[in-house]
Each structure stands twice: as C-alpha cells, then as structure tokens.
Length: 396
Image 1 (cartoon, rainbow, N blue to C red):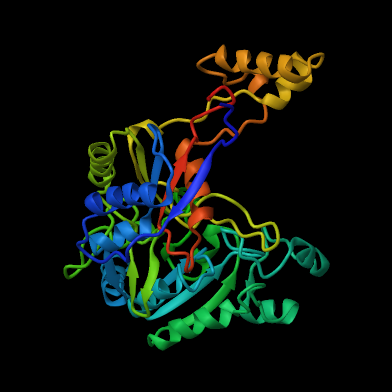
Image 2 (cartoon, one colour; image 1 turned 90 degrees about the horizontal axis):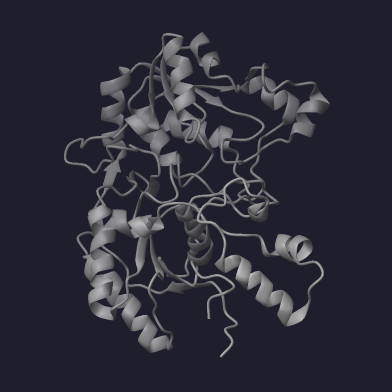
C-alpha cells in the first residue's frame, strides 16, 4: 500500500507533574496508553520529547529571590551593580531582577536597543534613523530616551518595561538608573561590578568586560550551587529559568541524562520499540510580526539519547527534479528521485544536491517542532511524540 503520511507531531496530554513524580514510569505509560486509546502504532526511531518544565518540576529544582539575593551578594559584593543586556520578559526575567535588586544597593540597568537579545522591540531601526541615533555608539539616559521616543510599550503585552523593571528594583529598597546602550564596556562608566544577563552572547560580553578589568559574572554563574538547600544548575545557573511564583523561579533541569535513558529503556520494555527521547525547551524560530526569537533558553535540548546526535543528511528533491531529472515526469520521475535518495552519500556536506536543506542539529529541529506543537499555555501536552522524522521519500 502507498504511504501518504510523512512526519507526524502529536501532543500527548499528561497528568500534572509534581515534585518527586517518577517520569521514567509516567512518560512510557502515557505513550503506550495514548497509542492504544487513540489507535496509532508506535515504531522504532519514534521520538518522545518532554518539555524541560515538567522535568525541572519533578526534580524540585526551584530557588527563591532570597536565594538569588544571597548569591548576588556573595559574588558581586552587595553594593552597586551594573545589570546589562537583560531580556524584557515578565516570565523570564522579572523575578530574577527582584532577587538581584534585593542583593544590591543600586542597580545601573543597561538595556540594549532597539530590541533585546531575543527580539522584543520597542523601536525599529527606522525610528533610530529618523532621530539620527547610532545604536552602535550612542548612549541614552532614561530622560533622553523618553524625550526622543516616548514610553517604550511592548507591541503585544502593552508593558512599559522601563518603568516596570524600575519599579521592581525600587520595591526591593534598591536605587535604579536606566541606560540604553549596546556596548558592554559602556557599563564601566558607572560601576566595575557587572552582571551580564545576555544568553547566547554571554561569553563574548564576559570576555570583553574581564579584559577591561571588570568584576563580572553572568546569569549562568548565579545559582550554580545550592543556597540554603535551594535548587541550582551547575552548568547554566539562572539561564533557562521561568517564573514559578512572585518570589520563586523554576530552574533549567539538571542531571537528567539518566532520565532520558531510563525512559528509553522503559519504552522498549513496554512496547518493544527502540525510541529516542529528548528534553526540550524553547525552539528556534522567529515571529514575523513581533520579530521575537523564541530562544530564551541557553540550548534547545539539554539532554537526549545518543540516536539524536548529529544533523540531517538529506538531498533536496526540488533540486533533483529541476536539474538532474528535468526531462522526466510521473512515475519515471518518482522512481529516479527515489533511486537518488537510496544512493546518496553518507555525508552530503558541500554537495549541491543538498543545497537548501536545513543545516541544524537534529535536537534543535525536533525541539522547535515540539515547542510549536506543545505551545506554552493550556494545551496540556508537555509530551510530544514525533513519528516518521527519520523517514524519507523512499520509506513505505
């Protein structure tokens, strides 16, 4: 029988996960029960993807603003701190900022412009051009920004993050001065103690500041060990955290390789199928309207089974159809393309026949698919089953 379906991404409704819940038992049972109840087959190389949120929750990996404040005081001295390049997010950064402010006497808050690192924008480059502002060199005070551009309201949330962040800082008994600048070294005109809050450019920011003599830490250096019995993440610190309550955050999961491998083994015991398993956070895609990159986690997948290592090795069917077999049609064309796929080299890097295929890690591609499938709201599908991802046009 001809097969018509290719890759299928299926969100699975899971129980509400609490601390100490055993995901190695819960997730495989969910996958098996879903296949039986909803009448779909399971296969070798199906991918079971689990959102990082329920993994961290099952681990009880939380910390409070008091924990953050203590670690900030321990590392940055508890006096003046330059907090640079944070993203503008109530979920991702607001609680962290309260903890940072509780551990300092004054914060120089340096915001990048016209947008933050993940694309949250108050301005456009056209706005800057109209006012003759050079974002690579010009430094704006809060007063100068307001005079030039007015209140910076987020397009979708309507939040004025300048006043919101300032209020959060002041509520902790901490003074605040806001600066708009895009060069990390600018903060050294105000203080030598720096917390750099960028995610994917953090290594460069820290390197530049350390070379300039700053006492600098990143969010990935805060909460790398327990404070008063708190959660922690030795690799990523506060990066990848999310708001849990007004005074507590859930950290990125840690030590979860045994979890994905345990789930893989249990799936095999229950179904007889060798499936791949991964934990995923934010995917990697950009909203064309708001220009926001959905990439606030330090990596898409912090833990995954070994069958997910690597990148795709695919030929471009469109290229074959328009070039190699432009004179063929119908079944003859299909057969020729299938023969080419079967005969493709094990490594197509640099070959024209792969031009236009997506050169990304498998975990990034699949994680992005899963993030879009599960959503971030009330779908209740923190587990995603991806089937047929490793198939191609020749697979029946």
